[in-house]
Image: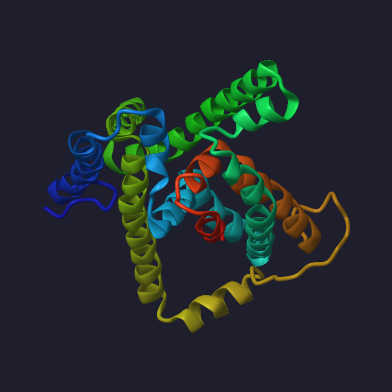
Length: 280
């Protein structure tokens, strides 16, 4: 009997297990091979000898959660393509971050963006306050970022949401604990390939079922979803050129410039020039 489209078969489960296994194996590999990981600098910063392209991919994946992958298509499906303009705000953000924050923080040899607060204000309390705020923000963020894909997986497999969160959380903790920054970066590279493959599969299959990209565009145009560059200055409007450009630029400048995940990664490459390229 043919299986329902919303059920996993043996191959689906095998691929799911393989992804978790490869991620864990990367951590184990660097734990065994990484005999040099006997210092904070080596464990947290990869000895400041990380390769440019893997680090660049790692920062991309760090902020490419299920919130973005599930939320952005839903937003554009329901509200139209105006949200695409947000991309230009992100481009401005990475330019500002690479020119303002990277030259400021990289030469200080920081392992944490909050060390700068301590140096700048000569206060451990400032560093502690920033650290606590970051931990609280990350706990809330990771809760949502973990819950979203877990509910999606439960919908197609019946695998409990809590079990997915626990399983993925344990695997992530394992490879981070064992392999440090090197394992995190290379696991991000591997997972980026999985995500790109999945997104391409969805796009290609969708286009095949509709007919062509021209048909996709025509259907969305008829339904009134094609809408770019709305310059309405009304701040109460859901999306406009100004809110997406300015809001996107401010939000992502902070993310790429001073977020702990970004700082720790761009400070792990050998030179300032490469750190700037990494953010770009």
